[in-house]
Image (tube, rainbow, N blue to C red; front, side, top):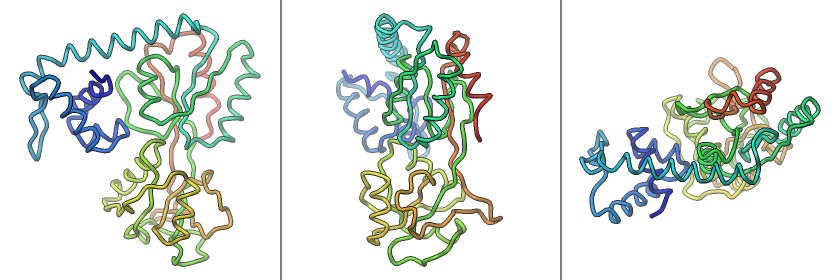
Length: 294
């Protein structure tokens, strides 16, 4: 039995939606739906009753959900205990970081913390956000840095910083604009990266907040640099935070709202509330909240 499939079930229960669950798990909806369908085949019974307007557990789903919870909790406890044996807690902060994080900010922040608390070691992991959040819940990480997202009840958070967003026009786009309003570019087709670092999810959320439909190019770019290259080729436009622009001499425009204020991407730190009182966590989270650069 695949543990990931059990996590998908939990995500659907928590969000009440296959679409929102897929977004929370950083996978496509077909991937999540197919995985749950395969789990239902293993169980030989349906877990969810779906209509065009709602998703609800079947009687079998309600019966089996507590057992799914136990399996997930047991796995988390197993990984936590094994990790603590190898790396005893108390002098190490394990940080998961999104690839989208501004590397200069991260390096400077960690260096300042090491100077202030030389007795605490830092272990850094960079992976996709779904894995980082899973590792956080499994207590394999102490804290996760990424794009501000919906919070779980078991998490606490602190703002880190905000970064301006830039519009990269397609190759035949208008040249030379230093700024462009969102409303003026909303009808464009956009090239996207996979939904693993937080950028794709944030871009889709940006369009939803403006009640506009995002027209996505059917392919996916491998990296932020490829986004710029594909835009230059005319495959579509792109949206990038300032620190991920590789071609700084390109015709990118600062993205603004109707009032002319820059549209930004917010970054935050999240950690398990129940572990916040541990001495090393208290030192680190206090340092973050006192030294953030919003």
